[in-house]
Structure formats: structure tokens, C-alpha cells
Amino acid sequence: MDIGGYYEVKEALNQRVLKPLRTTLEGDDRYERFGIQPSRGIMFYGPPGTGKTMFARALAGELGIPFVELSPGDVTSRWVNASTEQIQVLFQEAQVLGPCVIFIDEAEHLFGARTLGDGTIHAEDRKVTSEFLVQLTKENREAIVVSATNRPADIDSAILRPGRLSAHFEVGLPDEEARHAILNVHLAAVPSELSGEDLTELASHTAGLTGAELKDIVEDARRKAAERDAECVEREDFPPNEELEELSDMRNHDIEE
Ligand code: ATP
Image 1 (cartoon, helix red, strand yellow):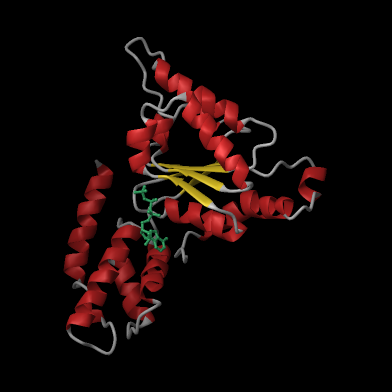
Image 2 (spheres, protein in one colour; image 1 turned 180 degrees about the vertical axis):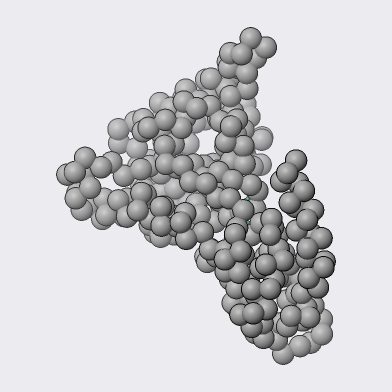
């Protein structure tokens, strides 16, 4: 899986999480000897479609360990009324797998701090969060818990403290360099005649768009090239600059709101 751009996030993830974890999983105790406990609790936060799930999958891929996803469907049907037993079972099942990534998308549903009128936290939320805290702080936990949210402010802060989901990475909107790289990723597997300059132009007219939206734009262009029965995807298969800018303005307007 190729993640375009986001060099700082990749570097921070590598230094803080991937390297220490990989080294330790390989049986090398050099981090532990220096009192560094590899991080087994991670939170990615940022707008929808910016690649948080990709980062979580890439982490499991890089470590060569299973990826267990709690999809939004699970979150709504199974987890909104999650009982403490269900959470225990999840971690028991994961422990049998050995090292694995448990990915919790839309974490605000599970770790939401819905407050009551008097400002105290809803009893059910408190129960679910408490059970997670118990599981997260178990000494021999093998699972690496990776979560993602678009609404970090809604997460119960207890879950984000040291020793819990304590490694936080912001995955924001892609900057121009990242947009260029993302367009490239989604063109890489098909014949393309776009020059570096074309990509720079596309990237400069798509400020505010997410990786998911850029991927959609490239897919539309690929579809157009197929419809033309063309040899290659060309600049003309992409919308003109004015159209891209309209899209970009709409998104930037959303952000201002
Ligand atoms: P949500 O918050 O809605 O779950 P997300 O932040 O987890 O979204 P992803 O599901 O990882 O976003 O991204 C959606 C799709 O957008 C990816 O499958 C990928 O095709 C594309 N995409 C997003 N960011 C990038 C990127 N940096 N490089 C390449 N593709 C990307």
C-alpha cells in the first residue's frame, strides 16, 4: 500500500512506533534495556478520507502481523451498546493471535465522552472506557491498539494518557507536495502521459481536497481514458483548472465553517 506524502507523519510513526516495536518483536531488547517501552496504543486523528486507515493497515503490513478491524458497522451495531464482556472477548481473541493490530475506526463512538446535563460522563460510556483501560494497561498485552477519529475532542481524555492510546499522530489535509504524491500513487499502475508539470498544476489547483477525493479524481480520469480507448491517461482526462478550483473552493469553504 502506497501512502503519498505525509513524510513527517511517516517519520514520526517510524521513530516512535515502528522501529521500537519491530526490534522488540524480533526479540531484540535494546529499547527495553534503556527503559523504552514500545508504544502499543496509537491514535490517528484528522478529517475523513485523509488516509488514517491506510496508516493503520500499513503499520500491520510493515510489522507483518494480522490486522483486525472493527468496522464502523461493528461500531454502530456491536459497540454502541458494547458490554464489558464483549471487550474482554475481543482482547482474549486477540491474545490468541499473538502480536496483531486491533484497529478501531470512528473511535469517538467507542471512547466518546458523552456528558450528561450536569457535566458528568454517561455511565455506559464510562463502563466501556473503563474496561478498555483495564485491557490497555494489562502487562502482557500483545495486541497493538490503533484507533482513528475525525473528532479527537470528543474522545474521553482518560484513554489518551501515557501507557494507553498515547502515541498521537495528526493526519491533516494533504499539502501541495502530498497532493502531487497522492495523484502519482493513483496513476502509478496505469499508462500515463502526465508530466511532472501536469501533476504540479493539478496539485496546485486542488487545495483542501483529501486523499480520498484526489483518488476519485484520478479514477474518473482513468475511466475517461478507457472510454476514449486511449493509450494513456492524459491531462485532458482530468477536469479543467476552473472546475478543480470550484471543487477546492467548496472544500475550503467547508473547512472555514
Ligand atoms: P475515514 O476517516 O473516513 O475513515 P480515513 O482517513 O481512514 O477516512 P482512508 O480510508 O485511509 O481515510 O482513505 C480513503 C482512501 O483514500 C484510501 O483507500 C486511498 O485510496 C485514498 N488515500 C487517502 N490518503 C491517501 C494518501 N496519502 N496516499 C494515497 N491514497 C490515499
